[in-house]
Image 1 (spheres, rainbow, N blue to C red):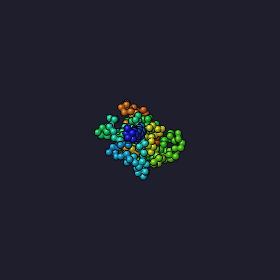
Image 2 (image 1 turned 90 degrees about the vertical axis):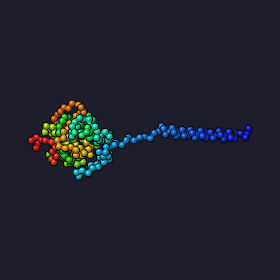
Image 3 (image 1 turned 90 degrees about the horizontal axis):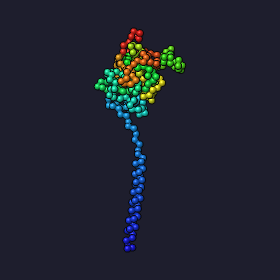
Image 4 (image 1 turned 120 degrees about the vertical axis):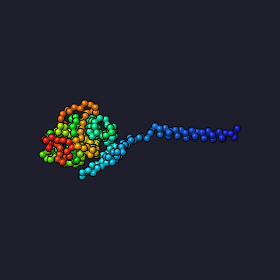
Length: 268
C-alpha cells in the first residue's frame, strides 16, 4: 500500500498546477473581452470622378495665392463635395441652395447633382427665390457698404471711398464670388468662398452663402453663362420672394467681373 502513495501525490499536484494555469488563462481572456480596441470612424470616401479628398481639399496655388489645405477629416462628411441623386427636380445646369440643410446643388444630367456643403450668414436667410448668376469674379475685391461701415467703423479703410479690400486669402469673399441678379437688379446675394472651413454646415453672423475656397473654385469652373439659381428654405417648399434685395454684404460688382447673364441699360 505504501508504494502506491507517491504516484497519487504527484497526480494531485499536477492537477492543481493545471487548474491554476487554466484560471490565469481565464483571467487574461476576461480582460481582452471587456476592453475591446476602440474603432476609428471610417475615412470619407470620394468618388472616382471627383478624385480623392486629399487632392480635392489639398493646397492650391491659384491666381498668385497659395490656398491652404482644408483639414477635411474634421468636417462632417455629408458637407464634403460629392455626387448624389438629384433631389431638386430642376433642369441640368441649375444651382439650388437649400438653406434648411446647408447644401448647394449643381444639377447635372442623368438625374445627378454635385452637392457642396455651405455656411450661411444672416443675408443667406433673408432672400429666396429664382434668379440668375449674372456675374462671376475670380479673387474679388470686397467693398463693405456704407451701412456696414456705420455699424463697424473699423471697416472704413475698406469703404467705397477708400477703394475696398484688395483680393487675398483674408478677403471675406474668398477665392471666387458669384453675383446673383433678379430682373436685372442686384439682389446683393452672393455665393462666395471662405477660408473659414469650420463654418461649413453652420449658420453664422455675416456673409451670404459661403463655400470652402476649394469648393467655390470648383463650382466657379462649372458655372456657364445665364446659370439659373433657386434659393429655397427646404426642397419642395413653395418659393416666395421675401424681398427683392438681401442684407448688403458689399457695395456691388467689382470691375473685371465676367458677365454671364443679361443686364438692363442701367447696369451697362
